[in-house]
Image 1 (cartoon, rainbow, N blue to C red):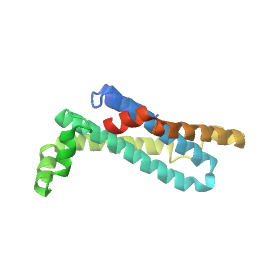
Image 2 (cartoon, rainbow, N blue to C red; image 1 turned 180 degrees about the horizontal axis):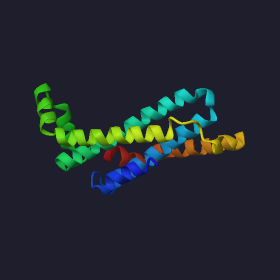
Image 3 (cartoon, helix red, strand yellow; image 1 turned 60 degrees about the horizontal axis):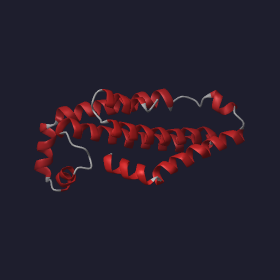
Image 4 (cartoon, helix red, strand yellow; image 1 turned 90 degrees about the vertical axis):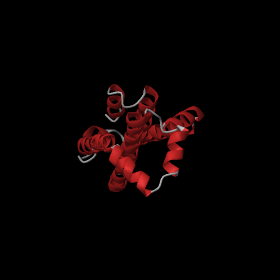
Length: 168
């Protein structure tokens, strides 16, 4: 379900295909890993639900930040001008920026909050699915370990690290 959020940003021309695709892949594997471990360890459910919410907020804020940069300035996050602008502003320039670009910021803030509320209530607030709990315990651990290894492989893959962290 999470992959529909970056897809929607791409379809509405808020992100380019590489930004949307990499956000979708990273979000999917991070959230899937946390879902599996949350359902396997029911006594740690609140810890994993908190981690799930934290990562969801970080990923959605990142998508919204990328979208704001693309809407307002037509640049990507890794552009040198963006980094220089962020680190060389004072309070007056920051307030002027927010006043001038309040439309883009508020639109992406509304999309962020809508995505967060929708995702949280549909997929994390409810009880664990009965199909996950009916699987044999050893099989659930193997699935969770496999998804975790895939998540780590994405982070240690040189190409995806270089592409994602320089594009996102």
